[in-house]
Image (cartoon, rainbow, N blue to C red; front, side, top):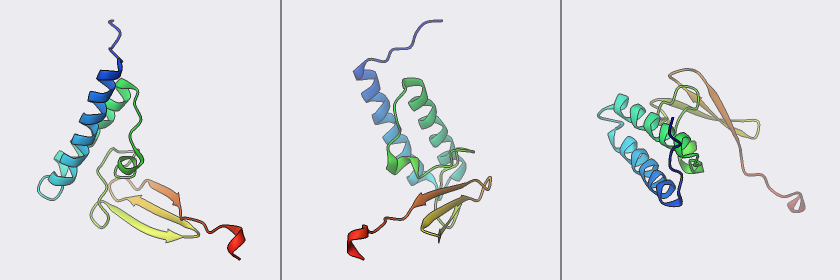
Length: 108
């Protein structure tokens, strides 16, 4: 099997396509939610194939377990509990925890 091209130009094209797919997923969610889930799957597949990282702003917009596009109130539940923001996917029940910004110990 032929090795895939991973030159800097193909990686840049892949990053642009991932960004474009996430913006399309955001636009298409309320009219076609299944289409936005498909856009996320395609973006993840492109990123894995080219071995590029998906940026933090995009990583928090999809479920890593079922690849569904997360919209608070529609496909995800967002709660603050014990110093963490807990995002629950309503499609598969998977939970992600993000730490809330901590204050430094010097302010106390």
